[in-house]
Amino acid sequence: MYLYPRITLSAARQLAEELGGKPTAALRQEYTDDQSLIHPQRSIFAATGGTRTDINTLRKCRFTLRELADRLGFPDAPSITAAQTFDIEAAIALYEVMRIAPAEAASLEVWAHMTCVMMPDIVRWRYHGERTPPERFIGSGRGVRRNTFGRLWWRAFLFRNERDENDPYSLLRLLGEDDHVQITERPSVAGSDVLARQIVLSLHETWQGLQQSGASAFSERELLRDSIKRIRRRLSITAFDLLEPEVLQEVVSGIFASSASALQKVKSEK
Amino acid sequence: MKHRQPPYRQPDQSRISVTGWFIALNEGDAEPLMWENKYVPPLDTWDAAASLTVGVELALDVAGILADCQLPPTAALCAALLWESEGTTLRGCGTIIPIETHLAQQNVALHMRLDGSRLSQSLEITPTIAVSTALETTDHFAPRLPGTILWNSSRMITLGTSGMRFPIEMQDFSQAVNIFPSGASWFLDWDRESFDRPVHGGLRLYINRSNPVMKRAVMTNGKPNDADSRVQEVVLFDAARSLITSALESDDFSDQLNTYQAGSIGNHIQNLIAALFPHESFQSLRTQWKFNRWLFDSRLQETMRLFQKD
Image 1 (cartoon, chains in turn green, orange):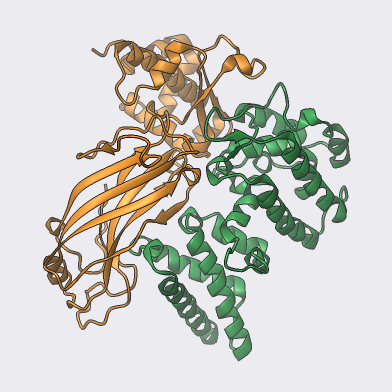
Image 2 (image 1 turned 90 degrees about the vertical axis):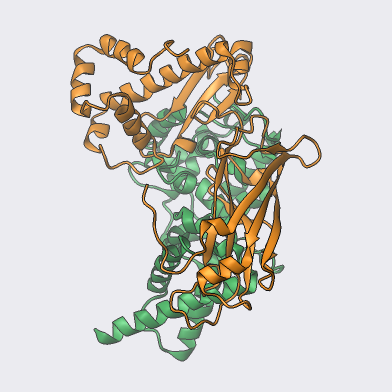
C-alpha cells in the first residue's frame, strides 16, 4: 500500500481560506516546483501502513490533471460539459496513477494535501467563482465526498467494473453529477461497491427497457431517486451484501421495476 | 435504545448460540485473539498493510429456527460474516455457508479473510443468518425475500492505537519540526470551524512517538499501568478542554445546538458536555466560561475527576 503526504486539518483550514479567493492562473504559476508536491514545512506521512509514494508519482498525478484541465480550457471557467468530462477523466487518472488503498484514501488529510498543497489551481478552476468554499479543499460533514479530488477517486473505486475488460470505467460515464451524489454521498448505499455497481447496472437496464417501450412519463433521475429510497428502506432488514451476484441482480432490478411502475402510476393519475 | 421489530417472523434468540470468536493478524503470524464476552480489546498492533482473519462458530437449532419462522424444510437459508469499517465506510461479506435445513441441528464455522487496506479506525463483525433465495410460503408473516435477516449479532473492534476514544496517529515530532514542536508530547488536530465533520476523519490526536512515555501510554494493548493511565487522563482532559472551550467560544455552535448528527464532532461535544455537566444548560456554561474561563478550566478538572481515580 502506498502512503501519500498529508497536512493537518487545522493547517488545511488556514490554507483553504487563503487559496479560496486567489485567481486560478496565479495559483498555477505559484505552485509549480517540487516543494509544492511534498512540502518540507507542511507535509507529513502516516507512520505505518505501507511505503511512501515517490515524487515521480506525485509529479505524474499533477501533470496528468493539469494537462486534462488545460485541454478543457483552463484557466477559463469550465462549462457544465467540460466540468463533467473533467470529473470522469480525472477520476480515472487519479485511480490509475495513485494506486492508493481505501484505508489511505479515507483520510481527509491526504486529499487536503492534494488540494491545498499540490493543485490548488485545479480546485479553484473546477469550482470557480469569487470564492471556492473550504469544503472543496478539505471535505465536509460527509467526509471526503466533498473534497475536489477525494470524491473523484472514490467514484472510480466504487464504479470500476473489473468484469468489463474493454472499458472498466463505463459505469462512471452512465451517471450525471446528481446521480453520482445520490449514490456516493449515502454511506449506506456507497459502503458496498458491489451494491453500488449493481444499482447503476439496474438503472441503466430498466431505463433502456422503458425507453424502448416508450412507456416512461418520468425522468431517469426520478427513477434513481425513488429506487434509492426503496433500497435504503430495505437495508435495515436485508443483507444485500450476502446475496450471490445473480440473486442481487434480481433483487435490485426488481426494486427498480417496482419503482418504475409506481412512478408511472403516479404520473398517469396526475 | 430503540428496538425495531421487523415485519416478519424471526427465530427465538435461544435457537442460535455463538460458541467461539477469533481474530488473527496476518494469518499464521500471531496467536489468534479470542474472546467470549462483549468487550473486545483494541488491536493495537494493527496497521493497514496487515490482513485479518476472522472466524465465528455458531451452533444452530435448525428445526427450531424453521418452526419459529414458519418456514418449510425446503427453505434456502445461509449464514455468513458481514463486516463494516467506520473509517473507510466500506462493508462486505465473508464466505457464505448454506444451512442444511433438513438437519435438526448444525454447527457452522464462519470464516473470512480481510484485506487491511479496506479498513480504518474500527471493524464491526456481524455473523448473520438470512434467506438466500426467494421462498414460497402461505404464511403472510414468514420471511420470504432474498437477503431477509433472520438473526445477527455484532461486535466492534478498534483498530490501531485508538484506546483513548479518539482516532490516534503516532508521529515522530522531531522529523516534522515545522508542523509540531519537536519537544511536544501530543497535538489535537481538528478544524475548529467544522463541528459537522465526523469524529472519525475530522479529529486526530497526534502522539509524539519519539517520547517514550507517550508511546508507552498509548500502546498498552488495552492494559495500561498506573503511569499510563495518568498520562491518558491528562491527554483526555486536554482534548476535552480544547473541544468544549471551542464550542463555548463559537456562536455557530450555539446556534446549531441539538442539530448535529450522531457521529459528528458537534454531537460528540454536546454529549461530552451533557455527561460532564448534566444539570446545566449550554447557555449557562457559556456565561460562566465568558465570565471566568480560568475557573471554568478548574471546574472541568473537577467534573472529569482528574487524578482522583484509584
